[in-house]
Length: 145
Length: 443
Image (cartoon, rainbow over all chains, first blue to last red; front, top):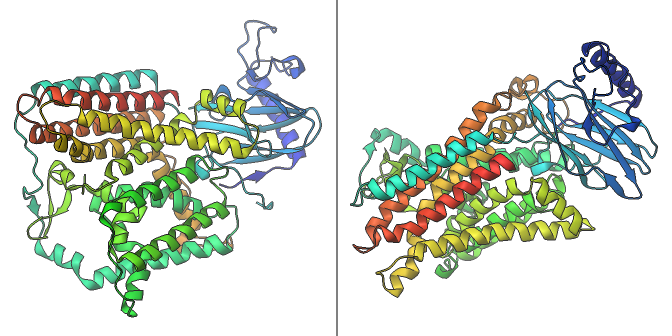
C-alpha cells in the first residue's frame, strides 16, 4: 500500500527513456509516438508504419477530462507484466490518478493538456486506474504474465 | 507517503485484484459440477450416512486437557487482547499509509478467521477481545444478564455480517481508516452492551465474527465428541449437521454467499457503467450498491428457501422447518466460494498485513525483523495455478454441499419423495455454482 509520488520531471524522463527503449525494442519504429491522433485507450498501432514491424510493447491510454466529462471510463484493456503503461492526460481540472497495482501508484494530475504518466506492473492481476476526486474508473488493465 | 489524503481502495486494500479465470476452466468446472450433482442424486447411497453422533478418531487425552485448561484460555484471551491493543494503537496513532488496520480488518478478521476456524475450530470464542473484556468485567462482579431472547436467533449476527460486507462493498470509501474505526467502535459498543444486557449467550448468537467462525468450523475435521467432549478428528460431513438451526441461520449463510458473489459482480464493467450512468453523487452510488448487495443476498435467501420447501409428501410444519434443516449444506458452498475469491488476498495481503503490523506507526520499527520481509506473490505470479485452485474450491464446495443436502434429504423426506424432493435443491445449487464460475470468469 505504498503510494509512490513521483516527481513529474522524473516521470517525464522515465517516460522518455522507456519510449526510447520500447522504440529500440520494436526494431526502429520509435517514431510512432505521435500520439495526439491516437484513438483513446488503444495500444500503439503500427499499421501506419512499416508493416513488417511488431507493435512496440507498450500500452497507451489517452484520457481526456473536460467539463466533468471523462473519456474513457471503465475501459477494458490488456497488458503484459513489465510492459510500460503510459497514461496521457488532457485535463481541465486537477485530480489524482490512482493506479491500483501491486504496489499502488499515485500521480498528480494538473489542469493542463499533454501530461504523461508511466508505470509498469510486475505482479500479474487486474489493475484499476482511477481518478481519485472525480471517483471514476478510467480503465481496468488485465496484466498477464 | 507524505500527503495525508486517504486513497480509495478496492476492498479497502488497494493493489490489483485477481485475473479472471480462463473460459475453459469455468466450462470444465461447470461440467464437473453438473456431472457430480446428478451422479449423487441418481446413483449415490439411499440411506442417510452422516450422523453428528458418530464418533471420530479421538486425539490423546492431553490435547483436550491442554485446550480446556483455564491457563490456555487465559493465555489465548490475553493474546487476543494484546493484539487488539496493538492494532488499536496503529489505528489511532499510525499514518494512513502502510497502516495495518485495513489488512487486519478485511483480511485477517474476515478471511483469516474462516481459514483458521476451518482448520482448528471456532477460534474466535477463544481470542475475541470483547469476550475477554466481558470476562474481566464478570470477574469484577458484573451482574448476570437477563438472558438472550430466543426468537432473535442469529438475526443480530446476520445484521452485523451485513454491516461488514456493506462497509467493504457498498460504502463510499471502504479503505478509510475513519470508516473502519467507526465500524469497530460500533461493533465493540453493541457487542459489549448486548452481552451485559443479555448475558454471554449474546456472543455466540449476535457477534458476527463469532457466528462466522462457528459456521466455518462446522466443516472442520476437528470437533468435540458430542458425549464426552473430547477433541477428535472425524468426517467433516458428520460435523456439518451440528450447525445450530436458529431464526436467521439461512440469512447468515445467504449474506456470506450473496456478498461474495456481489463482490465479483460489482467489478464487472456492465455494473460499473450502470452505476456511473445512473448516479450523480457518491451518496446515490452508495445507495445503488447497497441495493445491489441486498438483491444478491435476497436472491440467495429466496431461492434456497423455495428449493428447500419444494417437495411433496410433507405436512405444513415439516415444510416450514425444511429451510433450516437443510441450511448446513450451504456451508461448504460458502467456504468454497470464499476461498476461491479471497485466497490470494489471504496469502498475499495477509503477508503485507503482518509486515505492516511490525511497524504499526510508520516509525521504522522492525519487530521480529519483519520490516525487511517482502511479500511473496506466489499465487498472483502463477495465474493458472490460482485459477485451478479457484475452480477446485468452487466445484469442491459445490460437491460437498450437494452431498450434505442429499444425505439430509434422505433423512427428512418421506419415502417416495426422496429423489424428486431433492431436485429443486440440486438445481439451485448448480445455479449458485454456475453463477459463481461465471463471475470468476467474467468479473
